[in-house]
Image 1 (cartoon, one colour):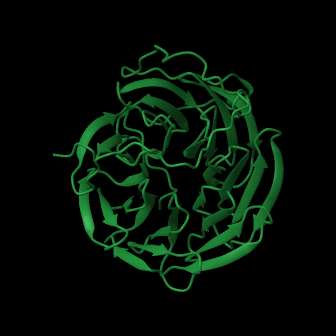
Image 2 (cartoon, rainbow, N blue to C red):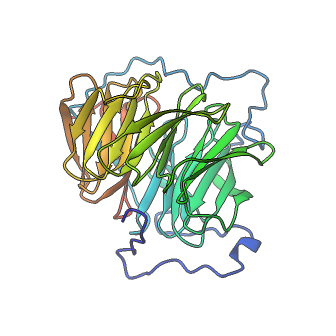
Image 3 (cartoon, rainbow, N blue to C red):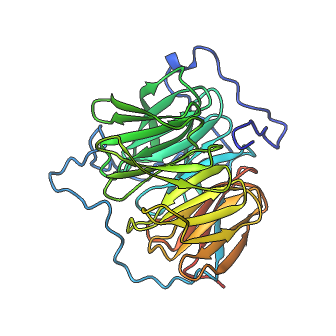
Length: 369
C-alpha cells in the first residue's frame, strides 16, 4: 500500500517525536550532508505569500527561453540524499534550482540542486509527511501528514519556519496544492473530502464531499478555475469548478486512480493508476484520447512544460517518459527504487524523482548523452 509505512533502510530507526512537539518551535535536523550556509537575502515576498511589490507576476506563463530538449536522452546530474528514509513528495521552487521534499519520517527538506547542499530540514509531522506544496511565490510551503494535519510553513531564504496548522486531528491527508495565484490551498483526504482554504486569512472556504473514498491526488489548471481529483479505489477522477464548487465531469479509469496532472496549456489531463495504465483525457470526458501500458502500478505522473511528454513512476524502479502525441515510449530511466514522486521543472528540461530509498534524483534532458 502506497500509504503504509516504509521503514528506513538504515539501522537508525524512525524519528522519535515527543507528545508536546507541536507546542514547541520546529526542531532543526542535522546531517553529515547538511550545509548551514544560507543562499541570500529575503526574497522580498510578504508573509502571506504575496509580492510586496504592486507589480503582479504572470505565474502561469511558460518560460520563453529556447531550450534544446531531447526526451529520448537523459543524464543524471544530481543525487540528493540525507539518510535512507523514503521520499514521499518533491516540489520545485520557481528558480528550477531548489527543491523541497516531504519524507516518511515526517520531515521536510530544502535542497539546492546545483550545489547538492541540504539547506534545511525540520520535523513537520510526528509521522509520515505525505505531501509538500510550494506557493507560486515560494514564500509559503504546505505539508500534509498521516497525523491528520495540514500545516503552513514560511520560507525565508533557505529556511522553513512554522506558520499555522490549518487542520489538526483530521483524516489522513494525502495531497496539498496551492492555486496558481497563491491565494488558496486545496487538500485531499482519505475520507473523500477536499478542503479549500484562503491562505491570507487561513479561513476554510469550503469542503467538497463527493468522493466516497480517499482523494489520492489533486491538479489545478494554470488559471485556477478547474480542479481534478483522483478518487482512488472509486476508479475515477472528478473535474470541479473551483469558484462554484460544482462537479463538471467524471473520468472513468479501469483501476485505482493514484495520481492526476494537467498540462500547462490546460487542454489535457493525465491519470495514472494501480492497474499500470496511464491515460490522457480531454475535459469532455468520454474515453481517454491516449493510454500507455506502464506495466506496474503508477504513483506519480507529470507533464513537461510544453505538454509534449509525460513522465510516470511507481512500483517499477524505472521512470518512463512517453510522447503525448504519438504514444511512444521515449525513455526508460533506471531509478533503482520504487518511485513516489515525479515532477518536471518549470522549464521542462529537468525531471526530479523521489524514491523509497531516500533519494531525490535530478535528470537533465538538455544535455543527455
